Image (tube, rainbow, N blue to C red; front, side, top):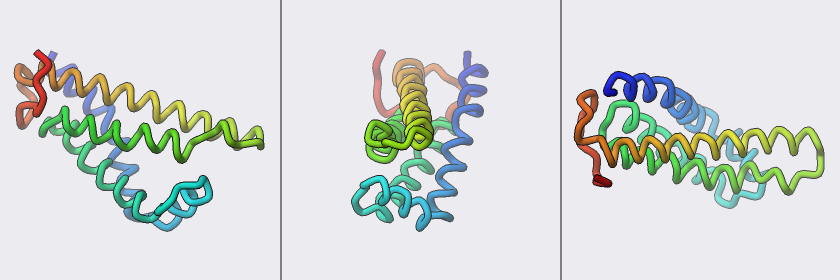
Length: 139
């Protein structure tokens, strides 16, 4: 099981780390888009999002308090889905479809992050390929 969880982490986390990089290197563009979607304090929130993505992605990937990292990803993904990709407000069919796809992607990733939270918090004490034990104990 340890190797399968490691493979899952290797497949799951690069998206978050690449997105974190973009949050730091393309802050103004991302903030402009977020602001156009009605997000207040967009620059600050893009930077906070970059931190959550970096810490959460590294945490889950390396198994450093992976349960806490998974929660950080959830705390980024759900608000991003609802505040930035609020497709139900779009009247243009193409924009609506694009934002609905992004919304569903973020919600699906939040579901994956929740699954990692459960794996770490329930079985993290028995996993060999992690650096630390989980913060939470669901056993």
